[in-house]
Length: 330
Image (cartoon, rainbow, N blue to C red; front, side, top):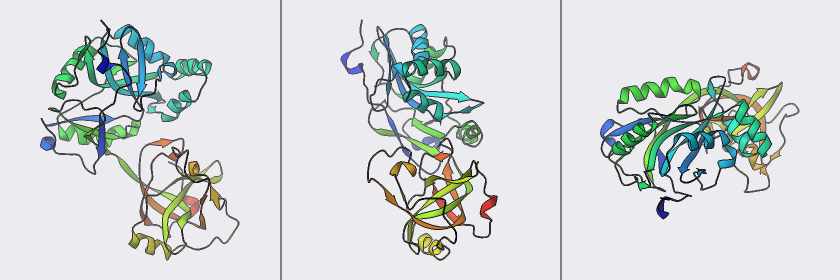
């Protein structure tokens, strides 16, 4: 029997809204269930007569993950829909770069990448079992169904860990980031699955580190945002931009900034993609106000593409006392 029409892909997935701290256990309906926030591609696996893999935006990604499609065909019974994250491990750490490489590659290259750097799947929810819609069930019941379903799995299919213990979740937030885990997601154990709604909450792990500010957006005295760089292969390269500066921070930083004294390593105009790796539209170029490089401390989450930050960083403070040549790439 095929899946009901309401379960045929593409499906809207449940979403999470960002919060600053880990919510207390009773903060969400039915109590919080805490899970790792994987640094990968959100992927819904639909096992009907065939297998198909779908992105958060409703794009069919089956051809980019032949390894996961093959495993799903072998290990999932028909009539099942699971929600989770596709990840690639490289040298003991999650590699978002390898995932992006797949999406931009030919079929022959994808097949090679699947052999060299196979994907894994971390399942954290089940939307259908035996052709029956499970989305109306509370998470605690869906989790029980998922655990039963996953009891016979083997790699590359995996059950994403979950805990009701806030202390254990806090420990995960501190220890799992070494492997590239972005943070935590908290979900209400009593909540049904509501696609398209931000019913969950997420807490991202953030680290502070020193980078080089060598340009700003806006004026020298009242910068609007920082453009930051790191020394890579003997050159100072742009690796991201900051969130908009608060007025007080803008004034304080503006007092420290100076115009370049020597030839500058960066151009005065860049394309949007140079500052935001996911920005493929907008203005043709962005004007930079070049400054004499200065060390600044930023707060940044652990998600990176190569050596570039995938999200805007937060300015913490200027460190004019530190030599620029002592800054190193993380």
